Amino acid sequence: MVFWGGLAVTRVLLVPGSGFGAWAFDRLIPELAALGHQARAIDLPGRDGRAATLDDHTRAIRAALAGPTILIGHSAGGYPITAAAQAAPDLVSGLIYLAAYIPRPGKSLADLRRAGPSQPMRGAFQISPDRASYRFDPARCADLFFHDCPDAAVLTARMGPEPIAPQETPFPGPLPMLPRAALIARDDRAIPPDWQRAMADGMAQEELASGHCPHLSMPGPLAQAIHRILSTFPVGN
Image (tube, rainbow, N blue to C red; front, side, top):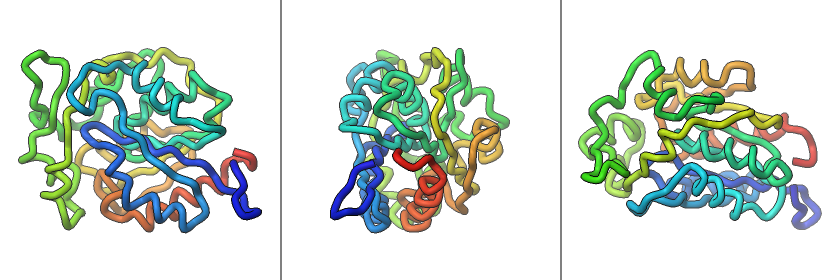
């Protein structure tokens, strides 16, 4: 927490999911700022098609932290935010999982995806010739991610490649001991909502009547939900 104009301000770092970049949070950041939170977003390594590992993602997040910060990870972003909290416990003061995969020690993100009760993303992956990265089939993106966004075609065009290695890397554990909460996307067509709830078992949960990307479809209500969660985290984070 930092102080600006005599007011306490929570630092928030937003971490995008597979195929997304920092651009995906452009609608959410001003909504959080209006509630008194200092939010910014980063791109993760490998979103330009180059090779990257989960360690690379972890280092990129750690390098972006200027002081105690709440990390919010969307979708696949749940893994690197947890790894960053494990690597830099003095710089991470809480984790919020946004329609996200929530790590289990010894399990990779791909393990959790395959363990889900259904496989809505089956057949949506376009693997690169070297099998180091993939893209989502543009013909599937609107239904999987953007069915409740009025500009689905524009958003689909912004989706990029995703390195495979981070998603096939088991989370080493143990899980960091700090405040954690989950925001469940109740109308998600990419990660089944019941699976989101199961992965978040034991932590505080809030639900939004949104698809996979509430930061794009309903940034105002999402910011309010994040604000409520932050109010329950220990003072000083």
